[in-house]
Image (cartoon, rainbow, N blue to C red):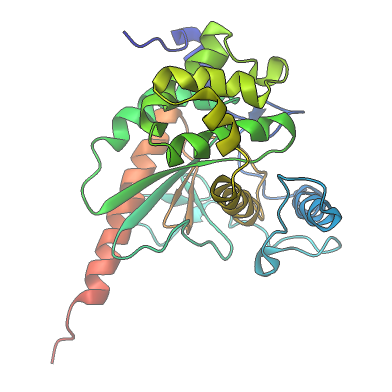
Length: 286
């Protein structure tokens, strides 16, 4: 029988989000101002670490997505009726500046959840989104993308991709939340788990612990890690990086008024993108 956070905690975390080790329960309200320093520093730190060559978790952010440290990012649109019928721009969703899908669409509609296993808000959101994604139609591709906030939290990003490459990601996903937030088997933000600690946990899903630990630093996992980290930085331009966050086709960042409302908004954005694609594919009337 699955165990989730008590209802009181679900309610408490419904509209909160994690923004990193120093602010694990910050509000998820959209940040239209005062984000230039946060965004510039996020990208600058990644570039400096990568140039130094001594951080296996570092990656130089995509220059096309970078913001000059001295220039404020373009302001997010004010709350007003936007192009999506039935939704309010700035309240239900934001347009992502230069937003891109995580993977080529290839005829699909992409839904990404940017998450962190350490984030309490993500843990409370998982039962909802886990059930919702099972109802998505065949033309929708759902993808979990772990957020690389930095420090020892990044070990869980590497563990996610190690579990993916070893074919146990689906079995392990919700259990990792349980281990951190309910059972205390993994430390999360309460301390630091070694690669061996994390690998020992994942071994219950039928993989060798030593092989798993080695895979966490493998070339394949490092490539996936770097791609997720770059996506996290690029999609966060103009807004405070936070989890959980849903993106639709990379172009829309879902806001909403509650956890349940986020899924309503996501459904509406999916329907809008489907209609747009159908309209573009329809032959012109003579």
